[in-house]
Length: 384
Picture 1 (tube, helix red, strand yellow):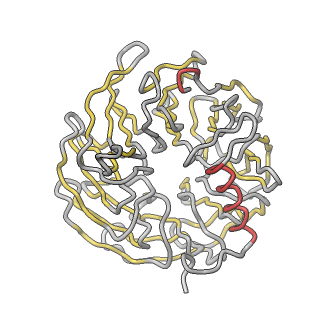
Picture 2: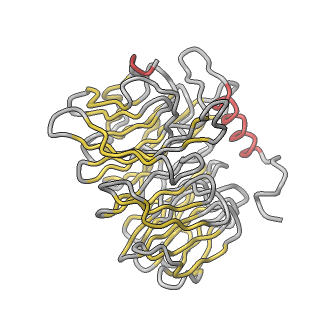
């Protein structure tokens, strides 16, 4: 019996489900009530956030919003982290009903063109090729856009026009961002399989079935790709053939966030609260650290420090942002947040940026060295 069919009785799973239920169904005080967690990304200068009713770009240097799209909420919902490259920002929406006389759900993919100054204009919108909600971040490579959908498809679009180039169907939803190298697109699916596709044509090169659903996109290394799985492992596959080289740590808790890779070491956490460092070539364990907090995000590595965003169990769940030494997992500092942290943080210059479900602190920037709060950004008034 695999993890997708086991009774959800383990404490870590109960924590995840309780936190998710609170997030999905209710709002308390300044907490946002929504249907998914926000999508966070950066191009190294701006921070991009898809937080439900809108998508925005925030400039940490100026501590000001650069733009927001659409200008006012239209009923569409946005949760997929935007993909920014070459002044172009691409993202999909969660879909919305066409109404009584059009029961079909309309799902759109948007491309915005950023100007030299503040602001962004719509470059194109594709409303015909995605047929179910988009939670996976798109990937821009040259003049192509790749993105996965909740109804099992991976789409390739022309980045300048939005025109469909090819469509490949997997066996289940795609939640993670695809990865690309040397003409090959690598896709992890909730059908337990990894797919290697020809990026130009969409033709299958190989596929590899694993032991559990794959909630995050692949991490690419030196000849190996790594995927996290609900079977309690990170799996290492040969990029050329898909052959499995190793799996670790065979834990009894889901590994949700994609592993982070630095200097031959993989770092990842599970929803039971254990943080792991393993050898990227062999899977041999280097160290573990018990955090006591459910980890759904990917670790972030910067300047020999490992940063982890997590969920703290409580009657009303909260969150924590914690820094660890990459060498031995020693905790360096930890800062609490008023809501659980579901999205992987991003680094912009000297700041580590997290997104929360607190309307008074939609984005928070922390000093990388000591965890001191540098700034926070509240829910934009135009989103109401």
